[in-house]
Length: 418
Image 1: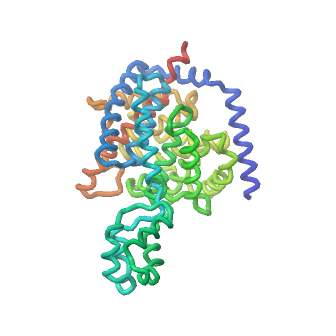
Image 2: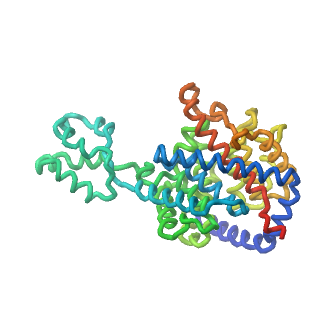
Image 3: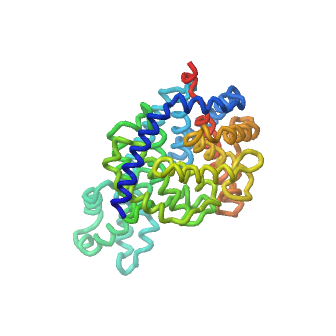
């Protein structure tokens, strides 16, 4: 089975190189040029969305000190993509944001961190209250290595206490393999950082950081070839665990596969993910899954797979030209932007009309401040009014980012026409 999949992967990689030779970038630009819906208006809409993404994204970094999967990586991704389409982007600020991300990610690669709630899980008979009191100064302090943690334990506990309780304390403090503060921000963040910097002069592309990200992603892969979903796909959407696992796995494999130089290193991880994904039941009624599956097919599937999923995604479009996340759900900028991004990336020549109508939907639904409103109630897994209100900020930004990425992907670079 694995040998046949490896052959499939090698053939797919060779085929993709051949297609790239036979379909030069100029042909893609010609396909995108056939999309006639107000090219100037599209660039104007993007020009208005970028300041919103910048202001809200920087505020998230400064006020929350959080490299979230729904704000900071998308701040970088949208601005790098805009720079590639010759928008006027402040390169120094973009480099500064990337440097902030690198610093934050490196600081969140800790093997041990005691937290109050974890100490509370330990039986009081096993860990006396006197020991817990002595450990309080270490709570929330991160440690990258076991020796560092043990050294601090030695400074607060007696030799006898260490002898009796050190194994219990170490077990309590060890971070879970997929904990964001152990993995540089979490799997979702790592994959998005790879995608946001790909093909550019981004700080994120420096081997000392990029290769570490790729290595962490490899460590997070399950033995069956899948990746465990984090908050982005599991707890923030009305999705089942199996669908969330599929989407997480596909995006991780897509991110790794963008790095051709690392394919020799990553081909086993990628092949395992292909094998796992092919064995999963389709979730074609989930249109985010469907768009992701089409992009995955472009990277690792056959022409027949690409055509099948392209037709399904186009058929899922609503009458207003946009997409909702599942059948019967109103169109939203989040899913519409994602669908347009994928169609423009995978098959612009075959989806001219659909990309054009998606553009029209987004142009008519943009808010005065340059953003796109994505109501969290349409997507979120919660019905609690307070939680929905808190999540509105997240989905507002997230939807604006995907709408911007979709519009950017649908544009040919101005230099292509010169």
